[in-house]
Amino acid sequence: MKHLGTILGAAIAGIFVFGVWGEFVSAYGIAGGWFAGLIIIGTMWYLNHYVGILNNDGAWVDMAVGIGVAGTMMGVFNEGISASIASIPTLAVVILGGAVGGFTAYKLEQHLATK
Image 1 (cartoon, rainbow, N blue to C red):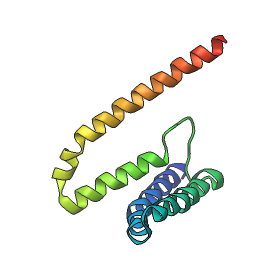
Image 2: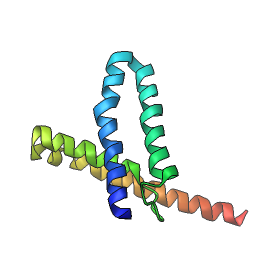
Image 3: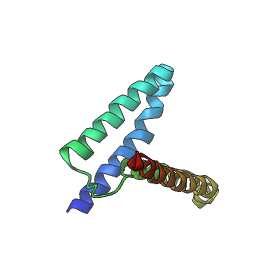
Image 4: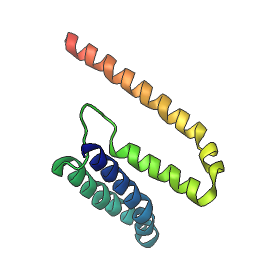
């Protein structure tokens, strides 16, 4: 049951981000984007982490994966499989950035432990 909650919590976050955020930005500009970010991400963080819908045992990436998958699949459903193929370079750079960030955090922790 905990895996179903994780899937639903991450999917709902992705649906709200791609379904509502753009509307706020269109209507209210940058202030609408900040408001949407506060309301959507804040509410979903509260539900997923504080209430406990999302099971996050040892994982550092949680809602971001659901939001990313929702955005990628929205493009696939709207434009076909070519959108998925076109996103491969972006996904490769994101994975590389995550690996570099993780390695940097590990090295920083080692450095701070020696002080």
